[in-house]
Length: 97
Image (cartoon, rainbow, N blue to C red; front, side):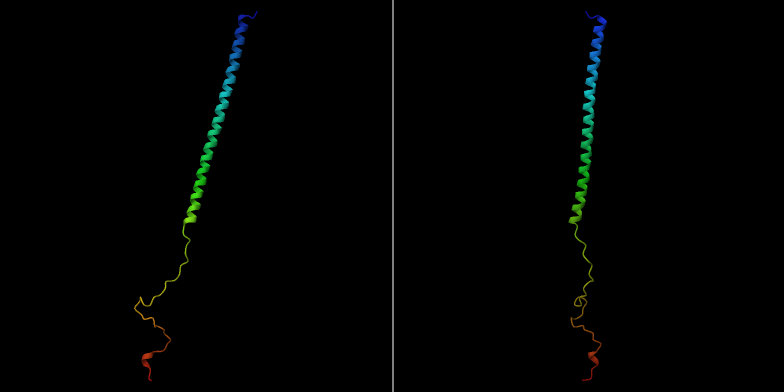
């Protein structure tokens, strides 16, 4: 027959082994959960970077292309001149015909 002390020792040994096994499983679950949370946070931040880059690219695509500056067109009719302003160096008022 097994003595009382040996029986208590076996019971205590089984309880410690069972408890350590359960604690190990819980630690594994927590470790996996922390890793999963870290992965999800990383993916969320990556998505944020991708959305920011896409918004910048869309802004560049939507912005009108800068047009080359052209000199202003001189409109003589707006300035009070006739359309017949050719200055060839001759003065028609001083002619002796």
